[in-house]
Image 1 (cartoon, helix red, strand yellow):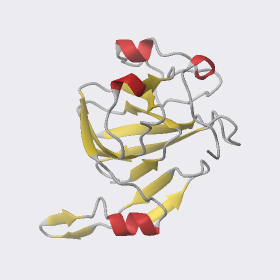
Image 2 (cartoon, helix red, strand yellow):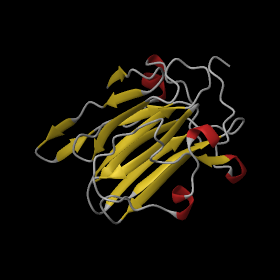
Image 3 (cartoon, helix red, strand yellow):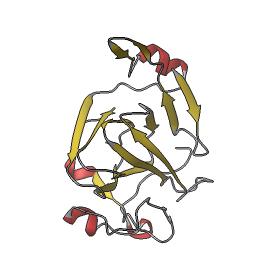
Image 4 (cartoon, helix red, strand yellow):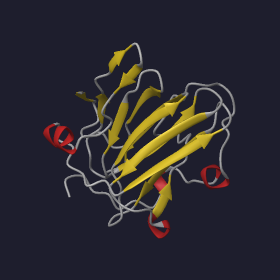
Length: 186
């Protein structure tokens, strides 16, 4: 397993080792010991899976406030997505900066997103499945979002088409007006 840092401190790309032969392939998607050695020390408590039927489906940008903030380990198990993390920690040198990566069933890469970051993704094809682990249970009263097209953040989504959004995501505020209790270094 190869773990690579990104320019957003704490956001990491995990490239698993694939063992293949004439029968198919095998890979470890999570090992507490290996992740801990790579600086990812989470106690994952819930696994989630989403299905998106249409290309251009956009989910995000989502996060949970403290004290129910979530770190996430994301992978795409069917199809492909453009996955995004946004630093929302007030006072951070990378505040409002974003990182994006293509995760797919073919490349088998994963991304780790720590607490203090918003997360979202856009599907790059029809019939996409995404699985992710979180280190805190879902808490609707702490659930928040930021507008997917916030001008200050300036995410360059991969399609020129109008994204398919939930009502919640259509109405999400810009980062400047979002409920946010993340402070850098705290």
